[in-house]
Length: 165
Image (cartoon, rainbow, N blue to C red; front, side):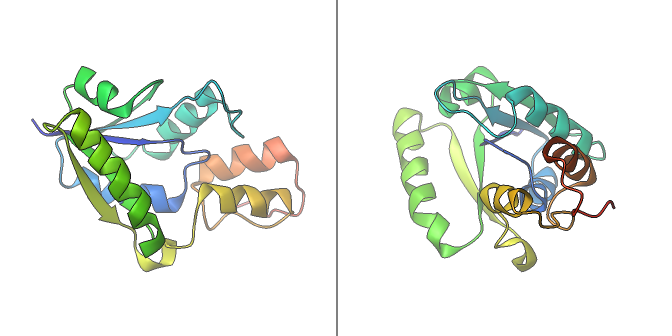
């Protein structure tokens, strides 16, 4: 069985993340979305909120699970029997960082490979940081995030200017 880990902060998950995930779900037998918890950083959403929102957003993907972890991604992958890490690329600017990360993980465990998947062009500009910026400035994020995320974020921030889907 080919098990892949799709690690990230997903703070919040976007349609770009889901596009990568849908592509990966057609390739691998099982995918675990591994939400990174960093105790030294204060995320916009708690780890629990992110896990819950992702679960709500992927109900139509039976071979995908959601979990959270702390520490090294490669150790989490080993613990879960994964042989692949999935990394998403939006633009060329992502590649240098992702290549360094991939090479570091390979040096730690050569048995676990990294697979890079790209988003559709319409998702290239979407990032979690951009979503938060738009939200905090009263903009409409409905076309960038899944419905459960939209409802949660607009409720959390209390922006009346964001239209309900």
